Amino acid sequence: MTKTRPEWAYTLPAALLLLVPFDILASLAMDIYLPVVPAMPSILNTTPTMIQLTLSLYMVMLGVGQVIFGPLSDRIGRRPVLLGGIMLFAVASTAAAWSTTGIAFVAFRVVQAIGASAMLVAMFATVRDVYAKRTEGVVIYGLLSSMLAFVPAVGPIGGAVIGEFLGWRAIFITLALLAFVAAANASVRWHETRPLDQTRIRRSALPIFASPAFWVYTLAFSAGMGSFFVFFSTAPRVLIGQAGYTEIGFSLAFATVSLVMIVTTRFASIFVRRWGIAGCVVRGMAFLGGGAVLLGIGEVVGSSPFLGFILPMWVVAVGIVLTVSVTANGALAQFDDIAGSAVAFYFCIQSLIVSVGGTLAVTLLNGDTAWPVIVYAVTMAVIVVLGLALLRSRNVAGS
Image (cartoon, rainbow, N blue to C red; front, side, top):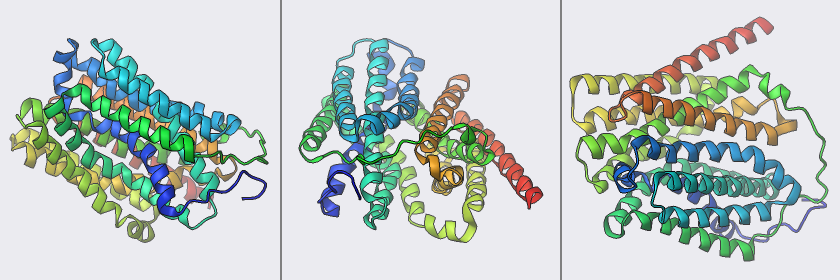
């Protein structure tokens, strides 16, 4: 790094120990809470729709906040945004633990998401500052991406155990304590990495929104992640509320879907080399649609929850990984000169689509069944396939 602040002198393991907690906490705040979701309406004397907002609005703010905190970290630095975000996350987690009404609980979850968004932006900006031209960057990005599947596999199990023995408030106290530990470590070891000679040429973001490829691949990412979002929004109600699973039993069943994602991730690079970006997305949409069909059969036939709900989600999980592992490259390929803005809008837009579309599916359809997952996955898969066909026709016409 030339004319920048001092380069990190950390070994790769030490750097990972510093970085990874922030990635884990942002995801863990979604997943560790799932086992107690069915009980929260009665605990806080509110409605299931209000509790659903604690999931949906968290996702919204996680994406929207990046558009705000990305430019802010360029202006004032990574360190203050990261430390401010983790402290906000910790305080909001503590406050959520002592909420006594649904409205207060939703409000503190929104604040928690704002803090998570800030610390994620600062963390990834730091990785870009330090490791963009270093071989360790590949390892770090790969590990951070794998958290997408790892945290959902273990988070609900941890939440179920904590909730069973210590109560639901202890889940949020745990998040707060972990955040305070990460903040204390970062306050000592995380120094500023924003380049001192960073040139700030203001370029228009309009080409991003005018790009068909950006929209098609952003929609594809939304199809994959949205299907998972609708699944974890409905899974507690289906397995605990309807099928009578214990919180531990639910968590173990839920974890199998995440494990399928982890296994598939190990082969993602092979799939990309063989099929390319568009080919992986097409096959991803096929798996989403195929899994949705199996879910529909399970609903109609009335098979056991594991056979009719969890096993079809294994098929959907393969489609999710095939899709989300390549869509960023497809959406952002044309915007190297404005990559920061493009990344921010990419995550912001998909978060809005996932949260709004997923919430509508859960609330308008029967959230105690697989139908929200079925309708969301099929609808989005059809839209994406049509979009890919349009892109292909444009490329053929332009060649």
